Image (cartoon, rainbow over all chains, first blue to last red):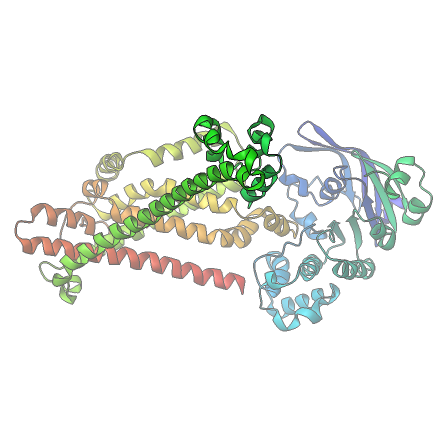
Length: 253
Length: 350
């Protein structure tokens, strides 16, 4: 039964970049409306793993995947085209990457490309998305201004709003605060707390504090494997593996 | 600065000034003063003994003087080199500007007497209106043919293709096209477009010929600008569930626009300036072309005939007046291309 409430079910996932075995035998269930944080040293496969979930790795030449990844029980690698999957599974990148367009255009871009033409509905969607990303008050008077004129933290919240506008079920975040100052980071963390009421969130982070603060579950990656996975509180207070405790206490990584 | 510090350090252990240790110490920090080390090593007998006797006698100042003197000479030599190079650069810059200005002034000064509204726009006997129109047609049609093909090819090469044998072959073909002398394009166009396809000598035959000629320029310049667009834009767009084509159409192409404009300007320059293939494919008809399926004479070809057939001073003035119009034409076309592009870019960013 636990399979049914799971959003993502990953079984025996292996991923190769040409000869390099980047992910080894990954098994994990990602529950609905929960925050899962992925921790582990650089190059251990965290980012590679979340890019499996929205098939971003399709863009990389020589990347092969075996195993199954189910979203609501359906194999996401069955469809030829990944765009339907990506509209259900949004992504926020490490570096804020707003398009060189106006703030309004940035948010409306995804829905427009998906076929929404009604100007009134687009306006509503832009406003509600910006509200949900807690940036509406800062940008409401300059929706026609270039998104590149915003600060880094604002740009990242804009990118979150852009993902929200697609009304996804899952949001993937690849170190979303690593390029931001502490105040902007705090805002994003608060945002994640409220967003988890509506979405499943998978967040890659290098900050142990951040993982402990905002996530319900934590998975510890090492050299392409998930070494330990469980409730965040348990992982941080009582890790089963020595490697996990070494990493979270800062002895290596 | 470095030299000065160095001097101070060497002042104290004065007998050591000639020892190898001191020499390396002197050579290392003063890497810039290679001349100095060279001189030191090159003619030690000449300078150092001359200053040498003073060494034990007057410890502080005297020890400073031989090295100091060498450095001063080296510095002066270096400064002279610097000034010389700077002078050369200024000279080169002036030469470039002077040549350009000289050509322009020479052309305009000789042609301006003959410039009049009638000369350019009337349908009188010696008006150049037909040539202006032919040139315009030729530019527009060759761009209309080459730009879509060139941009699509660049998109394919940069966005879709993998590094296969076929693609490497395609790149080799493009490089080779770029290196072929233009007269060969002319011969090919004459044979294929004029004869086999039956266009005869006409603007369309010439435009098709020239469009092949400018393809490599357009492909390469466009590809260069596609390469500068960050992967983050593409990923951001694709992550929203857009298709690859939507991403290219809405995010990649608008960002590549400045590069595409540069490509167009370079291509226009070649079309306007080309003579040999145009002579073979477009012909030399002096009348106003009624359509692109007729022969015509471009400004450049007209200029060639005017000069070739000139006998009196008067004829040369007409040639120079035509050249003036040609220069103005190129300037106007380039400026308007840039203007259109900047309009697009503004729309995109605000």
